[in-house]
Image 1 (tube, rainbow, N blue to C red):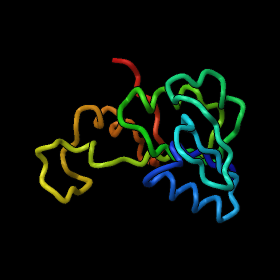
Image 2: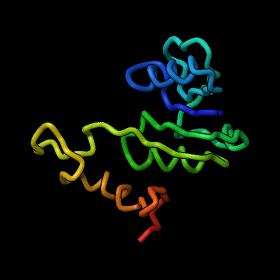
Image 3: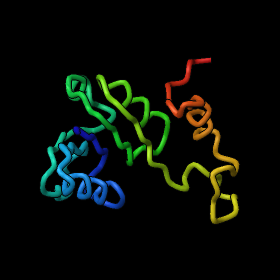
Image 4: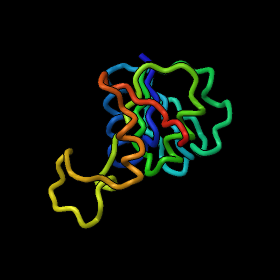
Length: 133
């Protein structure tokens, strides 16, 4: 199974890359190569906003997008991908307004930026890019 993980050098993305590599998956990490890379992964050195066709011909079974902070981050990666199986965007508390009570629960109000993508998940859990309105 071939997995693409954005980031792969710090925080959650690093531990996801280590875990899947140790399980024997074919792990690719997408980052700018500014930090030490972990063993057992294939580095795709690039800025997610300037990928061009760099990853278009690699078929990933899963894409773990752990470093997206806004709509442009998601759209640029999505537009650069060719065929892929599952797409999982791992978020943070940044999708909730700063004034929201903590701890956050999933049915709390989210920011307008997050809502743009949350509303584009259909009933089967499949995500799709929003149609320009």
